[in-house]
Image (cartoon, rainbow, N blue to C red; front, side):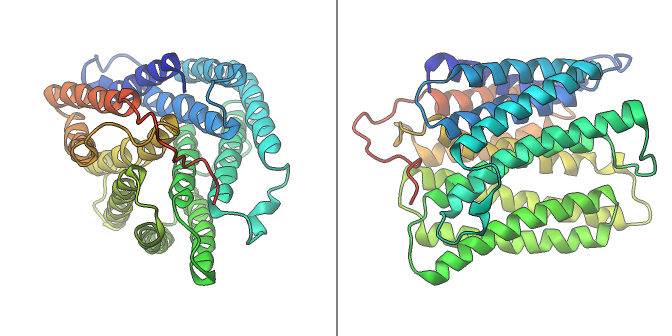
Length: 373
């Protein structure tokens, strides 16, 4: 990946975190939801572009990816100002770009999902692209319903913010692809476990999202518990089968973030079940959950893709991992309430990104996680 593109990603990701804190610094009279920019700049703009870069499998960033990145930034700006006609037009362009890349790399219909001989890493990769294009389409349909046609009006959770958060799912799936790509083949039992992990992750995410829309709290706890068990199994597979590389340390840390998000997610749902529940009283918990998901778990996979052919990097992995945890688990949530911590979290996050994106790679490295096993 070119230096200029990495610099652009550094700016976008840093701005994404900064916009997450911006409400603390501005007047409450300003009628804009900066959380939208917080979500878009990291998930759709930066994350979507990195997924397409990985899909093309070339060192140089193509014009198609540049167009996608520019269009997603325009999408984010118009969605932020709630000007939805341009958003709907841009949605069609973005879906066309994503699907053209997916079909070229895989196929129109995802037959590979049902083939045991296809590596699970490739299945997660295609699922990530499919989830990205479907997220764009579904968000467009929700805009049409909520802003223009009002066909479905009885679902309080059928809000744009709910579906815009869905843009984090493709990032999670591509991180899973990176994770499974590190695992070696070791018999039919582990192959079955890998495929079970693929189906459980995808089905649980889809079913969980439906339960959110229909506000079914007890089933949410049940599905999240299954997903938690699946993550434990995948962590075991990574430790047991993963090649002993620098990337493995980052991904094990990422799995720690994922387990943390599962625990905080279950805890939040339990609070929702209480009779005196009020969402504003537990915003801190949801923020802890979202920061760990976006800037913890998802960042691990995106970072590996950005430096795909540069590993091992010349940095102290475990020191950086500890620094990552302190920034995401402590500083960022505290930054929602205190300006000092907001500034500290932003500065630390920039330092973290600089270490990941610009550390020197080992010139004679012959290992690349892009190779399918």
